[in-house]
Image (tube, rainbow, N blue to C red; front, side, top):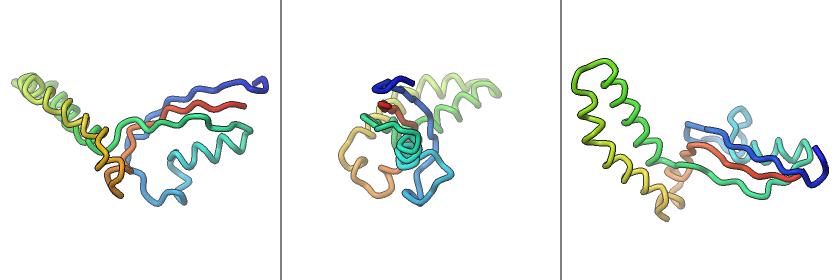
Length: 116
């Protein structure tokens, strides 16, 4: 890559972060920063996508989709609960989630911009 070249990375995480910054087997934000620095990139922006309530809501959406695939009436569950679950996901934007020791460490993924 040319000097001053930019890399854009978007990757799912789909688990809560624990043991960070000493957990080097999961691609946490700390690991991304470390690995990119090792190969000569400076992280300009790292955005965490989705936190606890996104995980919570997505798990139920996946469950309801599984019910729909396997049982009659499953689509009714989705129609009833999807709007509620979408609202619940919005709680991730609240300050209490971003500051809570547990809730802030659920990550849905990362969007990263780094420069060589």
